[in-house]
Image (cartoon, rainbow, N blue to C red; front, top):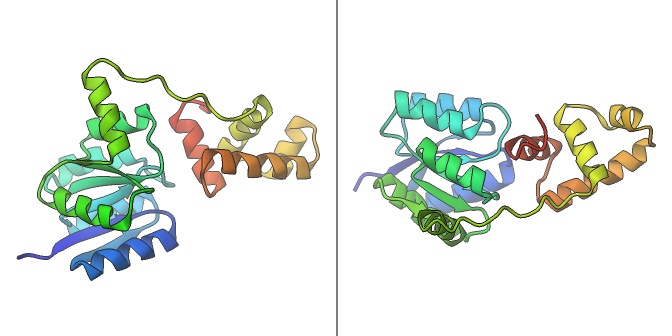
Length: 211
């Protein structure tokens, strides 16, 4: 049996290390790692793995662009999306782009292994929450999106974060103290379930909160 070869793309080194260790114990070879979309595409095109495990929200080239490009240059590379986000726009956008699977990071590591094996065989794999969305859409019962869990002031701060402003610059724009901005940014990261300003900015742009 041929060993499955994987390129692992996620901007959290600790998570990559955990997934890599689990896959290699299962005799799945991680041939390359990337922390942004641009490197993920370059590695996938150069190494031509069986599966690209791709975080949906990373710095650099966006996931749909990576998938579209690979469909043109390396159609045999299957893309398995691994992400913390399961909103409708992101889910259906990535599946329509050509991802063969969509796995939430809340799943057990063993589930990720099973999803990689399925993807390597060209089979679809969806986390239960994502499968439910797909079924509802197929039946014309697509649910409304959850309300954005931020206050108006937090949305203001998030839009400025998405523009690349520092805390000091945001404080100047909003005419507040810098420590107030730090407090808002901390709350935003917690409410959105993201780990960095970059992820918060991408979250905002993906949902049309920021241009």
